[in-house]
Length: 387
Image (tube, rainbow, N blue to C red; front, side, top):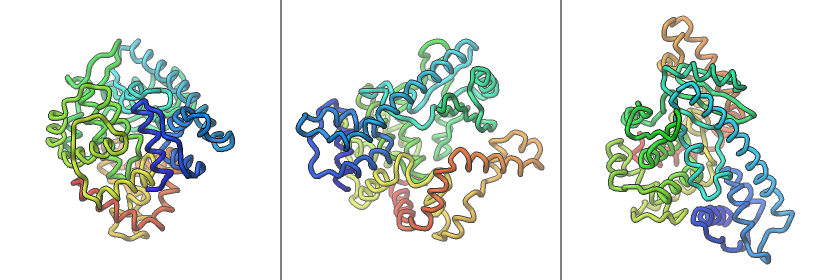
């Protein structure tokens, strides 16, 4: 771990613990900025750097990029909140149950909610309400970027919103656990037609979501910080949490993540678990060097190389191959009229290229240089018992 990575973690820990950060020593601030940007946590770092004593504060030149990102983050937060309010009001007026998950729901637990960034806002609705929800929001100015039978990807004022009727998971047990979330005691009404997950349920979900990102190439520090703020601010029964994780087949990996929380953030939980040194080294590399969503998204880049028997050429050629059962699941017209399967494939390909085009290009390039990373990721999944 580099000095810049260590100091980045120190700044995040100071933020979560509401303590003043230690002055930086021999830190390359350009390098620190790159680490913060890779994790999409620059605004948090900026707030903490402002707390340094006057004699240890960064020069105007060194702090300028941090301050610029802080300003943009606060602006984006306002845009997000405007979209969330409009979405909530619209669905409540029309009696449509909805549930915010991840960033939109957890942001309020952070010391400064405005600086908890997110790539998109995820909302769960009943499958019977999905199309109606998309139509209502379109009438309010939300633009439909891409849609399937289980999800609509929308944009409003440049911000992304994913309206979905199911939670994707790394195994069948987890998918079944969250299958009817809106109608279970794991949720509670938070006013109107809006619902929220119970803290324990949300911790299980964030854990499983982070592990799903591990399976598809890695996860960053921000997702781990989400676990921290739930544990830090909510009354969690860890015996029950670990029992649920065990029943879902993620017991060992959940213990590893709890241990990482304590190491990175000094999360105030009564829990001890020693991670094997080799696994810990890989976890540090994956989380700190892979970025917010790791080395790959879905079956792209290094992730695809992991599952292609080590052949870079095979990985590139198979990059956009899609399981037809997935297409039948996502697109009703393909299920009902099998001859339209190629149309569903083109739609999915369009989404892959234009929704995540820049990331996909990066990950295609990574397949020519990251064979070692692919091997390490495969070893990590095996050690975490993620299949």
